[in-house]
Image 1 (cartoon, one colour):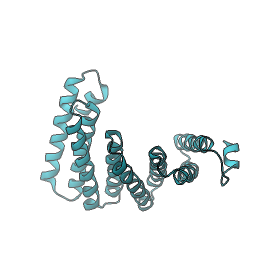
Image 2: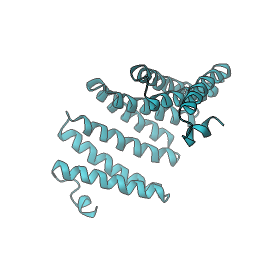
Image 3: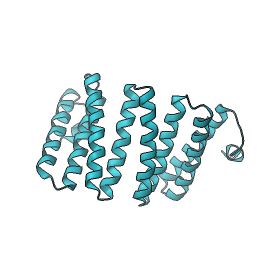
Length: 212
């Protein structure tokens, strides 16, 4: 890791830059695990810079763009955990913009799922900040993508689970806007989906917990 840090700012091969990105991510994860959020933020900042260089060097590489999204979201997660909600939202929005460019070029189901996750992250942060309308806009955008994914892959239980979560998040945002009737309706849809999944997968402990 020290060696990779030493070449920061210099032109190095892509495989070395990739290893550098992974090293910063590993450090950030470890620092987060032990509660050193400030140090984790610094590591993830370095991860973003490394990912940006890889993305700029080969702008047509979709995988490089997605790595940048991952890095931006990790920095935003740390900012949110440290109470800098505005800073987190700004970075989540950058990640969303990058992800939007990705799905416009290559709208695979996996990338579309990542796109929905970006909307959810923004919505969650806005809900923490007390911005009900903003949270609702983003959670509904995530829900729209989740519905599309289930339509495209109706047998994918993971997408159905995501759909349940999206309905629940919309319900939370509606509650924040004091639309309690609509909020309850979203929770009920979420529960119906979860109950169906739990019946289908009785050995899934998490699903069984969700319906109790």
